[in-house]
Length: 268
Image (tube, rainbow, N blue to C red; front, side, top):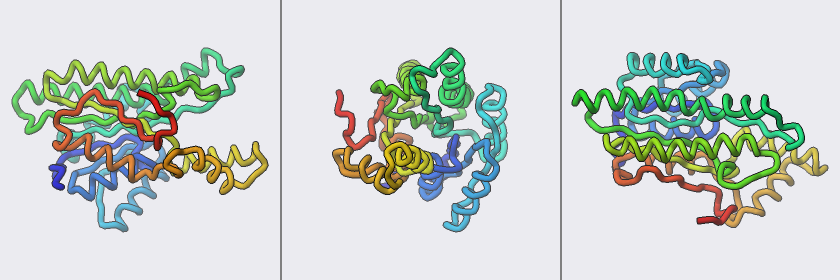
């Protein structure tokens, strides 16, 4: 199936590891011109080395997306170096977990700055430029955005209240912006992964293993046993859905929130 992604300019935030890196790899394999942004130079260097070993070459940008001017600078740099952005994949930012009794105003503020704004700032800048090109008649296609958010915004967890609130806010922003920008043909969707086999999950398993007095492998096995599909997702599986949502094959899909937790949380 031709997804029509060849030569599309794709910006992946948080693209140096985990799901973001899997997305960068997947789009590059489809022939897209990929740029990734991360605030960690070591992660960027590792990502470049890994992808180069596979014959994939991408544009790297180091930036902290917690400030709107940083996001604007990244979009400008990528536009100058690679081309006008056709597709944005937002995968930057991770929310710390807190015991409910330790939650305070500072914790909620820090969580929004860590997870919500690193999505909103680049998204707003990319949308602004997409709309400008459409109004000027210089856009070949309207453009697409996929936000990798998380199931923590769909159900409440005692240790993920602040992070869940940030995720829920991102879901609302996704659908609201999709509704408005549909008039321009711009599509905005979200994927809500559950537990996925990334470095972040490995760290969580090690913490759980310490609390439960078992090995990390046993903690992982117990967690996977609770998933109806019997295992956690691979980052590449999340990336495959991002590919589809960003492609012309999903030309009538916008404002969708796609759950990917193996039906761990069955809901409508």
